[in-house]
Image (tube, rainbow, N blue to C red; front, side, top):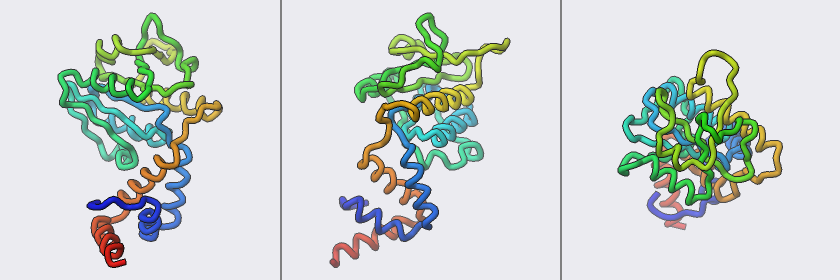
Amino acid sequence: MTIRMEHTEYINYLTQFVSETRRAKFDQVLKFRSRHITVVLEDLYQPHNASAVLRSCDIFGIQDIHIIENKNAYTVNKDIALGAPKWLDLHKYRKAENNSLECILKLKEQGYRIVATTPHEKDCDLADLSIDKPLALFFGTELTGISDTVREHADEYVKIPMYGFTESFNISVSAALCLHTLKEKLHHSTVDWHLNEEEKEELLLKWLRNSIPKVELIEKDYIAKRSIG
């Protein structure tokens, strides 16, 4: 948009271009959206895995996903993601000398604890991980897991208990298990994990714009009407 607009007024204007069912769905989803937990994907190279994780993030109400591209470019498999990316905020890191470190420092500056999903001598079981403060869950590449950079800078390490012969879960399964467990803990806690009203309004505007065909033409018409008025 070329001029700054009052969000509430513009949201009310755009609402007429979506069905009542879609508008009600937005309100329902916003109730469970959160930035208390964020997910970080480090160098995933299989599109179906990255896409499945995005789908799980949307389902469990995780709004922000951070994507690190040190060696492998991030791509989406549309048949698996099922449109999830357009409802999420994706933050990509691919221009720094060490993209993993850049991501870690940014998240720590925002108040997140860096939680590496990997076995470690100081690890804890997923069920015992504290949710009192915001946390960023790091998931590493399919073959070797998280990088040494993440291991060295992590505040905590978490593992999912396993009782069979196989040594690890598929990364998309790991992400889904972690998010389900932690989101359930949040729902039964006194932690204020919800988005604030300003965040909800910004997301609602974004989702409306992503849902309306030729929204740019509608915006031009809205701006023109405001100018005349």
